[in-house]
Length: 256
Image (cartoon, rainbow, N blue to C red; front, top):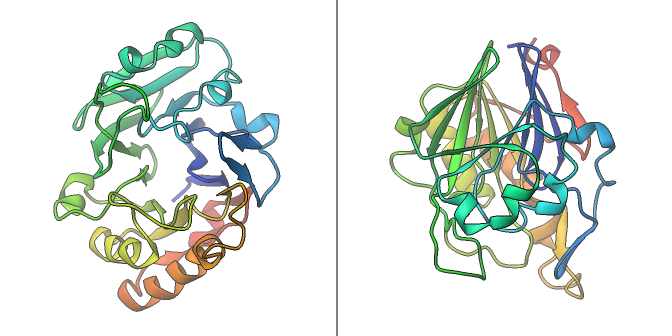
């Protein structure tokens, strides 16, 4: 499994497969509205180097225009259908935007990127009623890597995603309470058991937290990664789980 994955924090990862770099939900900000980055250094400039960028949904912490502005002009940007209408600023970034819906496939060099469903509110909140689907993506090259984006657990997840080698699963959030359409560590472990990949990496936790709320349910910030490892060992013992630090890379040698 020659894929390499680097976790930069939150839902931002670089997936390198077949010589192609795919970046997910880039968020390179120290502060976003009421959130501040509490753990991990800001990603270095190399994090913005990508052949293609995947956007799972339109929330500001996943589709962040100032972070997308750091990409090289002409970079392929794959977004949920309706995103360019809901977020007019996308058209001013000089990127090659491709809109997709569940089931659509896009070629990125030797890779195939397939959009899959996610159970999440995909709107550009809090502005406007226009809806776009929340998506996950399966990146297929020498390996098959599933980036779940933001999603709750749903019955058809395993069938929609199909067989994968690596799963990047959200296990927490950015606040003291998780609303509907999210996975916590326990539900993420249930999803892992259904998906049965070879390897898994917990993401979307332990990076951003609301300003002034450091003392409110701090375990929701610090513990989801370790709790996911514990729950996964119980529910999916055949899966190798790798809890990465910010900026840490999982390479092919981890599968040996």
